[in-house]
Length: 249
Image 1 (cartoon, rainbow, N blue to C red):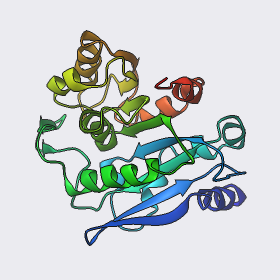
Image 2 (image 1 turned 180 degrees about the vertical axis):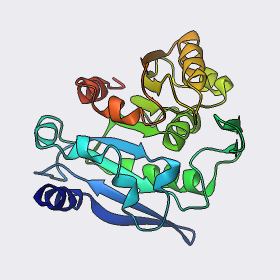
Image 3 (image 1 turned 90 degrees about the vertical axis):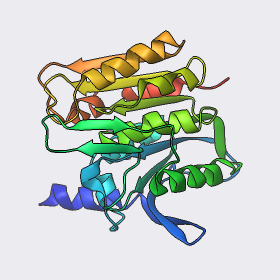
């Protein structure tokens, strides 16, 4: 009981915020370094949740991945601003039509189309946050899992100059968009080989296309993982070290 209480308290280190644009509201949670000062510059990490964490409680998005950034040792070693936005139940990060009458699901990606409202709001929010003087614009990162992995691939296409590196867990996208990614993009891609929701071939295809177009895609496949490969990905011992060493200059 004590452990769950401590865990709940630590999640509150992610402050509840919302971003408003043209009458629309995006809920998000933000973690800042312990000794945050507006006169310093910090890296910024955007983390996009999966379909199961959608809603309006501004809480469920922290279920997967937040503990990595809340870890005391990691906070001391990698002082950073971390943002977890939340998409509403009826929306999706990436522009994709999902057929759930097959296993695995069938995905028709339309990443080149106008973004969903949630993706549009995230991009506007990121434009706003990265304009702050305390954000190191050479060290802005994005990543996500499942639906959030799909959103990661799309935002890298729509905002190619914003990010220094990315991670995508059990996601997918239209491989054609890789041609328009920032040159030399560093991305770590993860997928479970037994995934019966999002087929692992989608990650393999994106890794291949990104590398074909001059990017640096690192692919980690977990032979015994099903869809929840985010557990393995967030447990990678060098995950944060790899992420934060990337810089645009």
